[in-house]
Length: 305
Image (cartoon, rainbow, N blue to C red; front, side, top):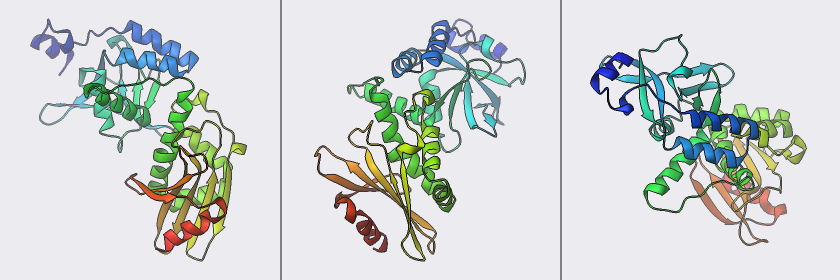
């Protein structure tokens, strides 16, 4: 689908042309990039959810468009979109430019999180990145809207709680099960510096990242020749329900397998939950956590089972 072909098919339908205008979106992008607050991000998302954007594409053997991707060695692979044709660079020129609603693009990106790290808006000007964690949150909110459920926006106070849950229950175990021993070795080597870098990496709004390496504590324990356990204590501020007081990484060298345990805050102030996440990121409830001094033995017992 070239520009000419789009106009020949339905010249009167603005949804089939690349004459897309999003001045209000572009203005809000600038505001958000300057302020970096949850409030300004929500304003931008509310604008985008009703707008159409442009997606450069190549054509496959069936002459169907396949979205182009942008890859850099430092940042990874992203799906680029543009708010107007003026934002699209002249070179390299793609075979087609597809006019899509932003929500359709977001849905498409959410299905490819194993191939891309997110969406980049106007990469040669604004270069605003929406990481997969935010893309999936938008999907969740839109699904709730369609089902008639009450939706919410993140306030500046809620945003760190949201990021923390995403890190402890999603980003961190996902990285662990994908990298395995490689991540364990780096964690044992750099300890607090490493977990701080990892947490900041997961943050969508990096300027709002509230922690320093000294906010974490990492303890490495060689339980046996086969079993290594690493305890990571997390900051007690910006905690919601659920969130983790600490997590335990268990690595069995003989079986080349890991397990990820969580000590979670609950509604009951004196009662913590012992949880676990598998490689599928599904939550396992092991019941009330023992007192802190007995946590390690309980986790060792679970590993032996």
